[in-house]
Amino acid sequence: MKFKLTTLACLVGMSLAGNALAATDTSAEVKKLRQEVNALNAKAKEWEEWKAPKTLVHLAGFASVGFTQPEKGTGSFSTGSFSPIFHYQFAEDVMMEAELEFEGSATGASVAGIDYMTIDYFMNDYAALVVGKFLSPIGQFRQNIHPSWINKMAAAPVGFGHDQAAPNADVGMMVRGGFTTDSGSHNYALYVANGPTLEPNTAGTEIEMIETPGLNQDVEGAKVVGGRYGLFFAEQQLDIGFSAAVGGTSVRLSTTNYESARSYQVVGFDMTWRVAGFDVRAEYVSQKVGDSSSSSITDGGTWTAMYAQIAYKFNPSNWEAVLRYGQYDTPDAASDVNQVAAGLNYVFASNVVAKFNYELNTNPNAGQTAENRMLAQLAYGF
Image 1 (cartoon, rainbow, N blue to C red):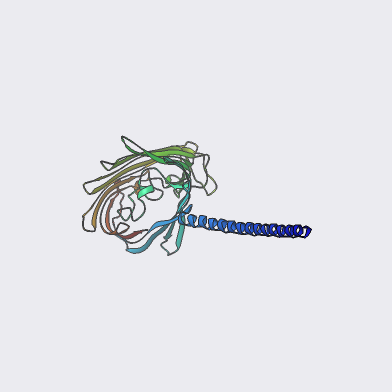
Image 2: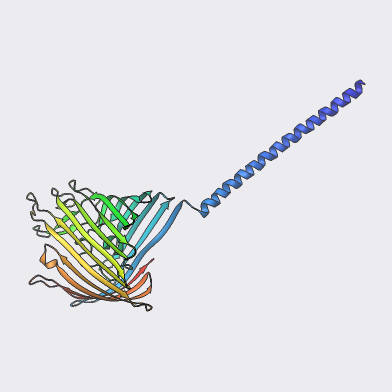
């Protein structure tokens, strides 16, 4: 009997030991399986991120080549410009955007610059905060139409070039966005930025130009506050906008020396209308600099420019005709220009256009002249 009990005890012990070992083996297998599942889940998340990444990268831009023939000069080919545009967006909240500009000088040297570079925070569906260097929101041409493949002429309207009547760029911060009501679609831009500077002529007796390249310094506390309000009527395909800005500016005596600030203001109006196959545009802008009794150049001045343009594409052909009238008025009588420009474009694609223009330029002031010229350009947007 004792032997039987001892044998039974041994058998039970062996069974229990075997079950314990089996349980240990099972636990190890489960742990290993869990590790493998976790690894697969991590891989799956990586694959999901690859299919729907939070960071998006986009490259765009434009380039042009051309030929210019002055009425009394020698015609020249030119490389125009190459302007890549970069967009880097993280999720739905933040985007960095920048446009670089590469141009060839008359001597063949390359000149590089930053047209704009901002970091944008999308606050909601109706507003974005833009900080950095941005194209001036005054009017339409500089911020929306200046790319060569969008501009229907081979050159900017008179007065809308660099450092003329229309502001080019600003460094500061801006809130812009839009919303829709029963009256139409509204868009707006409000900004505060470093003010422009005034470039005197060689003799130091007059202000030659208002420099608005987007300055990385605040001259004598000369901030500028302004913006644009636009209203778009979808049914009529009509877009109208009103712009204004006020602040200060000062005469630049040297790279580090500026006079005290004086008043500065900008007003503008723009209109775009598409009707019966016609594309009609008009724009007006005026920059006014106040007088300053404490300045070496006491007189201020007003720089004003306007243009009206009509274009028509002869569908289904690729030909497009453009006619533009412009005026540019400055304190310097020799710089004033009235212009009538006619153009014929061949549209290879929506982003590839060949342009052939002729400009009739006159100076309305007695004893002053302006030169006519012919231009040809091939523009490519990407």
